[in-house]
Image (cartoon, rainbow, N blue to C red; front, side):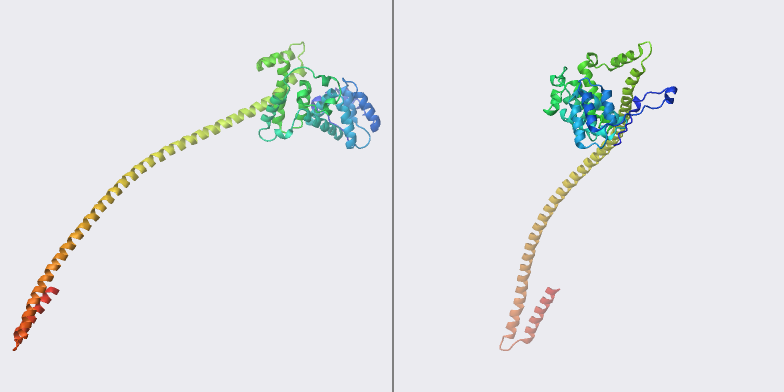
Length: 379
């Protein structure tokens, strides 16, 4: 089983020239599992167990492959000392995030992390996507303990809490912060990790520091720098710690500024587009009003023309009726006159031809007159 681990780069001390020439200290040989478990129990028996000794055992491992049963037994014994389990999980989670962790240590870490996530109700799926950074802030704000003091159950140094449904309401602020950090180290999105770390740190300091609770960021920074530089020799670790935290915040601040500038440019562009659309809308509304006026005028004209057409149709009907009556009257008069004239000539012709001695010449004359009358009528 390959259990070689690479510690975080920040924890590697700078070797002197003489130290470089010294041979590296050899790692002790791996122990059989039974002997490993005996030393593992002994190292975790004390509530204030030595993390260095526990870490060395975990790093070195044991002979053979680690089965699920082995891992479960190792994890259960570690969880019997909750404080040591929390601190060891913090170290392992940090090393896993910034360096390399052996498969054995990683497996133990994941089992402990799962227990911690259950006790503080931490569900990694809630912090995925674009709103993950906001979701982690909300989680700390709503789920973290809001009181000081130690829980008697945690002081007992047993794993009873892990076995009886321990939850966030029965976990002390210190324990909650460590367990939350162990779970947070598994997040792959940098903004979620940074926002979660900042939110948890601010929450813990608000509980334990009246000065920080006043929310004066510049004063807090001044006190931190003062503590680092007021000694005879300026404290490099303290300054490194301060600016290690400031660097990612500066990056986040720069990202937010760039995003703000981009949003401002987009807003300006959209404002210009809105102004153009408003002008076009005003022009269209003016054209629509003109069109509506023209339509109203056209409708009025159409209505007037319809009225005139109705009047003209009525006049035409009356004229047609009048002239039909006049024509009928004239036709009746003409018909009476023609009947009278033709009847007279026909009667005279009949009288001329109806005598004992017919007057053919007179009858012919009367017939010719009738013919003339008919020709005049046709013409």
